[in-house]
Length: 239
Image 1 (cartoon, one colour):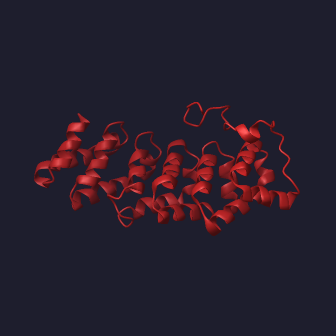
Image 2: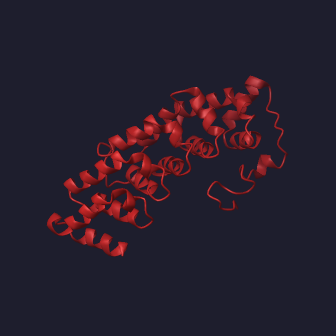
Image 3: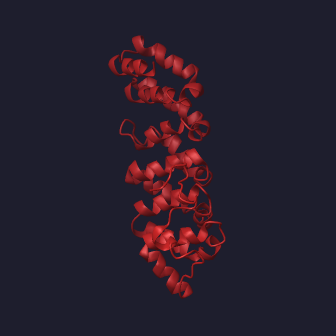
């Protein structure tokens, strides 16, 4: 049924004819947005609706941002908005600002952390930079996120897409917090993975501590499978 509604929104742009769909979405917003198929309809309301309809839906998303961002289905709406060309930065300013202001907590929750990872993969360079800068507001943010079961994936993804001064600042913070990171249950494995991926980090640690002595078995150096014993955070077996 949701495919019929989506097709209707794609083909019929007259608010006099499609308005009943927008009104239904608005009046049942969270129930629809946070459902497996309803989330697709909400995206079409944004991409295919009139300017007024689009603004109405975006306003509701902004007002209910936490409930949507942390939902297993609703978070896909936020992913869409932060990576789509159907909206401009000004239209989602409130949504992005909420994320920037609450980045630490967002990166430590399963579904909202996934939103940030997708931003690093598909968003504009401007949005990526804003998010990374917000993660660096306090030095301890980065280390605490690396010690978190979801946050560490966000930081790893950030390191892969960051360049220049921001990249070096992240590595510097990590190198200075390496002893703290070792205290995490998966700390040694993660450190080895980071060093294998980012040679500059290994050089920084070697210069500051002489050398990195990992208590992790040698096979982790080249065959690290993550801290779930071979499973990623989404429950899928790593190949």
